[in-house]
Image 1 (cartoon, rainbow, N blue to C red):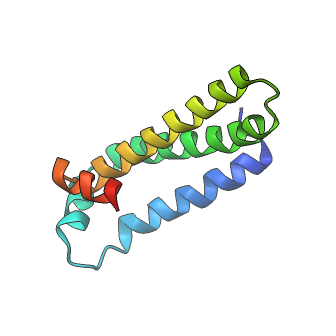
Image 2: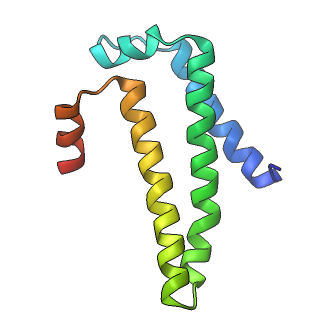
Length: 107
């Protein structure tokens, strides 16, 4: 269930993606890739990113409050996994190649 605060975050992130649908005026091969996605694909990707962000925002305080190494490892792994999912979604959204992804992650 989405709480009022997470609903606000959801609406904010959704608005960013909806704006991207109509305000793509920059000429770039990456922007062109986004334009080729249909509305359903963009919605699925947006929802994946929004869900992941919400889960990270819930997990970070639990990581900070973890009392044992086992708990810290669990919450750190969860956060890392979610951040990785967001990275992969963004790379896919922009159609980055493996070489471009390595440059981004290196930098």
